[in-house]
Image 1: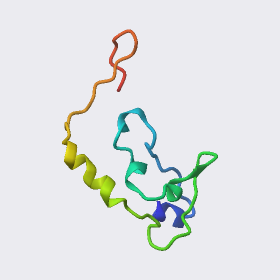
Image 2: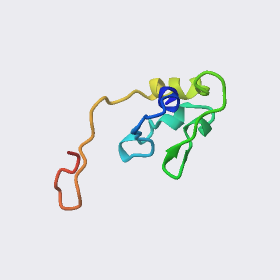
Image 3: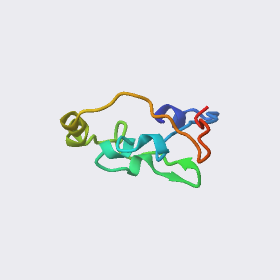
Image 4: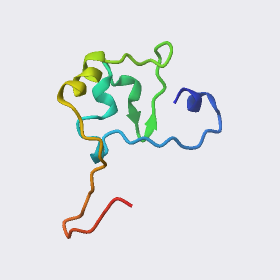
Length: 86
């Protein structure tokens, strides 16, 4: 994002925060303050803090190791059973 903010003709930066496949592992769950990842009217807001402007919540990062994980991609199907993630 920092590079995108510094390039005058930068066109698009995709993001996936809040999308259904990030349940219990969304980016905002691992930062102390979600403010640097704020969007206003569909546009990212440039951080005013030094560096990347992010403080990582180390306890939140370590927490998944306590419960273990299942590294498999989930399969999403619509109400009619049709595969929906293509």
